Image (cartoon, protein in one colour):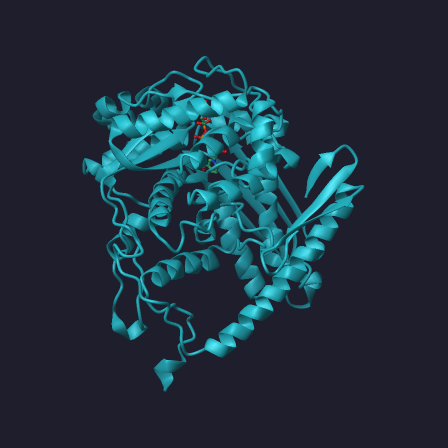
Length: 505
Ligand SMILES: NC(=O)c1ccc[n+]([C@@H]2O[C@H](COP(=O)([O-])OP(=O)(O)OC[C@H]3O[C@@H](n4cnc5c(N)ncnc54)[C@H](O)[C@@H]3O)[C@@H](O)[C@H]2O)c1
């Protein structure tokens, strides 16, 4: 749904055949309702077709065999990682990669580095490491650049973020100091709590996009990278809804030239990357690539996209616990989540506009997992509240509390309390690494590169992107199965359905 002009709201949906439709309404509520209804119908139609297809093809679960280097190009040469926003997450990620390369630490939390993947039957005992099963770029091949509104190099930015111990940072100092930020595309209206000197100037937003494209080309040339990835680790931008400017490449480019206020800086980086054929992942909850224009560009230029908002602390827990309640048909009357955090991200989120963007991203999760429409007695009246409070003494060490009111047999109430004393960037860094490597894989893979949105990477996001006709999967274990089955599919391995009847034949 988007607002065309004051008083004109467009419902915008895709039918079961992938055709896009739009219809005009006088209120946003009517447009949203129509869009939801049509989307649900399209989804039901697709599901029924998939079931018919599955019934016809049951017993033939093997996907066509593909070979390394055939439909997946080898990961040859350097992979350039470009990061708008060189703050706590970005520096913890880059410093971590260097520490691991030097043998100073282990890549804990990273599926690509430590995870295994079961192949074939449980009795086959085949569980290679993910990175040995599928051709991924090696850590030694990663090279980095970034943009930020502050002039601090990565060593200074990591020291200011205060996530990593200074003894570790001292050992990485020469490497981290060599990564200095390029001038950023920035608009204070989108991030009200911060301002900095290292900002590009241009005659309009198209000019700024051109400057980012020049940066990308320059980095590719000077770093010698054979492939590139852009990973948004910048601050959360103020909440906006899609407008007509975001509906096609043509309207977006016109809006860039006209300095349209609804084009946020993150969208300029995304546009520049996709125009250069570079995949883009969005770690924040901003719209950024979750827009028709970006899907169009991504498909056209075969540059995969994914987002939004890294799933790290509280939402990770929520997407583990909520599926358990639903699996056991336990009801939920309320879920109150509150956080205290004191890093710069917390300061930015103290602004109501940025908080609203984050809130929307965090709130969608329960609705999608618990499906109150299907289970009205269990989840029809749940109250869900999310708060984030900026509390400087804690720095990056966030504390997330959850009070969960559930009810069981005969309606008897129970409570669960979760108190997660986590480290935000320590949880985010391995996600960044996996996304870099998997997006690069998608880009090298003939099956995935033209799809646009990489839904199989929803495992990593609070608010996963899907095509408009699909609701997102939030359940962490469905997401993990989707990811691993995608890898099996790419290599022509049998998909794992957990049916298991064959063991009892
Ligand atoms: N750490 C987590 O667990 C986590 C989880 C989900 C999402 N995120 C999101 O990841 C992003 C980064 O988090 P962080 O903790 O590193 O924040 P941070 O404040 O430490 O770093 C963000 C950096 O982005 C820079 N920046 C802002 N606008 C920019 C622009 N237009 N161009 C270039 N640089 C820009 C800021 O100057 C800052 O250095 C935030 O949006 C956050 O909400 C973090």
